[in-house]
Image 1: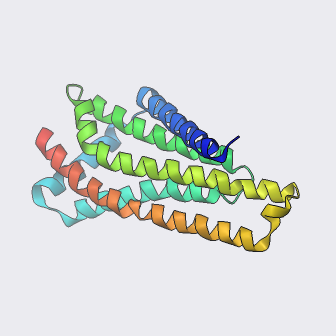
Image 2 (image 1 turned 180 degrees about the vertical axis):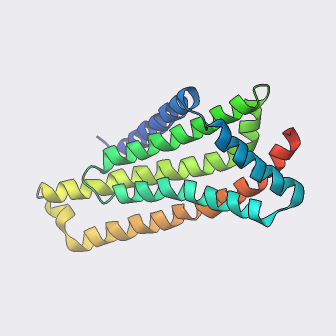
Length: 198
């Protein structure tokens, strides 16, 4: 298969896996009411009082929530089963986003979907594309491990292998830069939107 088409197919498949996770999460999962109430109170408290504690809580949770799947996708690249692992990471990312949408809809039945779009769309788009992109790269990088095990001399070449590894790590570091961007969007947008609707 032509490498250009192969690249598009892998990315399209990962996007489909993410969409499946999004659908599954939005239909069968949502945050427990007590947890949602706690997060909403913290966010609303920051929106009303400007509490630095509330802002920091949202910021740190968002950074952790978004850094984990990116790091997991990166680590999958260093395994021989990176294709399967990266697909699982992508699905779980979609599932989490779908669950968040379901939670907002359950909390605000009248305008939950609109609220989800306002609260989540900018940062969800950035973080989801980051995970899908890195998963795509992880699948390609993991192929080198299978090829080396199969005795492929091209992949076994030390200099070439080092170059591939360096490029993969560089891509990971670039994608990781989306984490603070998404966290800042979360920390500012979520309290403001919640203040508008509560």
